[in-house]
Image (tube, rainbow, N blue to C red; front, side, top):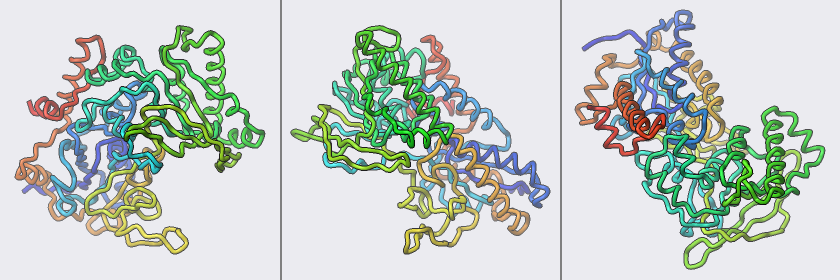
Length: 489
């Protein structure tokens, strides 16, 4: 057995939250380790249930986001570090247990993402033709265990949601297949699916007003450049009072978003004036309606299938409070997609906070607690912290915030981890089994064959070679068995 005196950290989840946390831990340890009595050496083992790393960046964001290549490249550089060891195709709770990790690691950090939709919760939500965004995103992103075909028969569709995922879903439903293939890594089944998509009219319903939407400016700019698509807005939605304009102006990002939405309003007017054209002035064969202050209240059905959606007009005050007006309108649609939020994954052996939809942790500081408890007034009560267990990213805070939030989260959690490790006996080195090969022997004894960083590079090289055959940078492999064969070749 090989004894090692480096700190040993297990991270569950190789998406942005897990990779950033690993990088920040090593950087902060180098900077503060001696002062904290921890030394500067650490080994981080990063466990991922999928055969490939990058989580949300590879499988949760629309393929036509230009920033994705840059983020994936940055994450890959971080993983190419001798102190970080990648264990893909290893599922926590199934292939390895919490007790087995605690025996071998001084601390365990959960950076698990979100794979389930929040339920729609409207009458008619169970009709054939109602889809959660998560499953649709899995399809168009080629998720290893996702659907391989998607029903795109509806000529009129509705998308419910006022955030970036709703925008992604709406954009992909209005996409031209050839344009998408040319600029992204979509696999063949997604190209064929979008090519046969019958959608010609799309309604995006946002419950609150223009100044309260949660879109990023980048999402709006991508929406503006859809070949063959005419954008249509209701001018009344843009009649903002002075208080709302003043409130929106206080936050830089909100102000930029509202300014971009007004640009879209002008574009929509020009598209109509020029004879129902797209952004380049070409005849549009698809219409994309954006409805603010519109709260869907019921999905209408006949014979178990979606035939329409009933929407109530709302009013939104300057402080973001929404009120109902009692005015209703119905729209004919044959499919409804809801993007109203995700539910982060649970983890076996870890308490879950259902109220806030994340792993139970103390006051948002990332330290895992024995239970999620709330006081009688609904406020969080103090609960016992479980030593050596932490959460970051969506696992810590719920499904809110972008990648920037994930970075700041990681710094906070790493700071807390280092503080706790410095207080522990023997300079934080508390795991009983300090043999770095112990985890490999355990997995091998169970017939588990992890895919390491070198294995991922083989998959990536194959994807690039397949893309090059079609003049593309990259083309995704979607079959997990093919991934395994490539990685272990």
